[in-house]
Length: 281
Image (cartoon, rainbow, N blue to C red; front, side):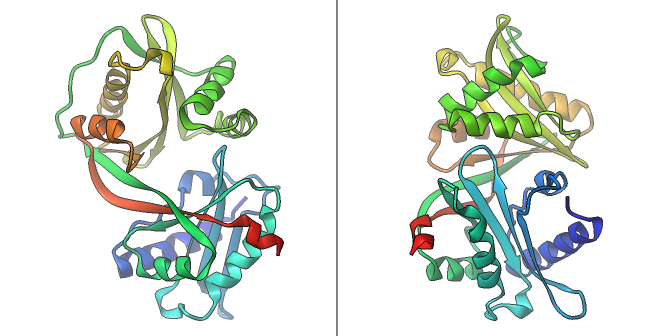
């Protein structure tokens, strides 16, 4: 578990890096605040005065391990991030895949990417919508019900068939996050039958949508649009001004859906697959 000081230090460094490069770092704050005590997925570089100069985090979301980090703009090209990276990858001897996450417009990130054995994998658009944006009507036959523990098998099934997450990894991830206080999973029902899921995390005056999936057996019926509309309207009715989500750049269908529901892109995250075989040499 990260201490309050560590979290404050990470937040301060993030703000400096983002303002300097005009970027959005994807540090997954909901995960950072709920790190298990027995996991060592966070790496820090402090100077002698106790100032945080570099930070790197590993994340496991029920699939490939993801990596994201940063170095203070005034202390780059000193090997800080390379040192953190080399320390972190020692933990990945059993990982099936490592994805390095980097803001698409970050020149410093591109420089690091060129220095390690990796290849471009995919990009995600970060999108958000304001409560003032118009949104469509809801099919009353599509409802959202708060998930209970007996829904976990269905949730794991959706992660497997919709996101290609191995069953065991999906189960481990969903069991870990299921009871998080600031996020809830909802089951999408169509005519009373379970047909999908959506996870909503609340952070101050904003909500984030994750793990949005409709079972392939129910796709093409407008269920996803109605479920998303329902979820968005519910958050705005509670006073939430902004609703955020992320979508793979190549997912034209989802991108079109989100745009039609008032979401607009405000940033792009690139993902690069690191060659884990290079660690065995």
